[in-house]
Image 1 (spheres, each protein chain N blue to C red):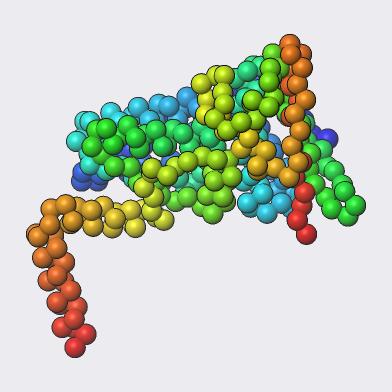
Image 2 (cartoon, one colour; image 1 turned 90 degrees about the vertical axis):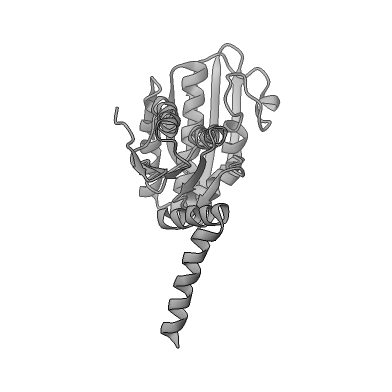
Length: 141
Length: 131
């Protein structure tokens, strides 16, 4: 059985689910993610499900549970790549993933994390963003 | 008629592919393909969980000029004690989510359960091709 790789990028873990997961593989992935969060002191986990043709109640529950468990370890989970068909099916199935943060794609998820960090640490990040904004407005004029 | 035998947990994914290929070929759109594949995943997992073994049977059906597909999920397991209760969101006897039956009904156009205690269960799902 193939193992889903978990990539480390700074304090973020990136998990791209590329193959359909058997139930056992899904449970193992959940444990792997939590172990890596602890090992790397990760602040965030981005899970990309864009390759999945369907998300059924089992995988849906695994994903929302993983988000809850990671939150207990002070890491936030962002789910990316939910297609229109998967989104419609999840709602009709009656699965509530309300507590899980989502982003359209990996890039937006990384931006979301940057913004969260900026509002958490305050001045430093925001100052550098303001500097950039200055430069852009100078260029424009 | 097409038939797929359910023998183990691994057949959840196998049956999904079986149904997805069939309904794609029949001309169902992506969203209905996803609905039917998801229904298959839920109901085949139930077969594995509650009965161990079973079958998925797929038939072409017609209503006037409308084409559709009928899928039967059959097993010879313990049967469903209380169908009304089993159709309630969140009700489960195996520690699942309780989304499988009521959720699959919402994803179907027509949905029927026949079950006899000790003899097994047959769930029939029909989806019509939208013109």
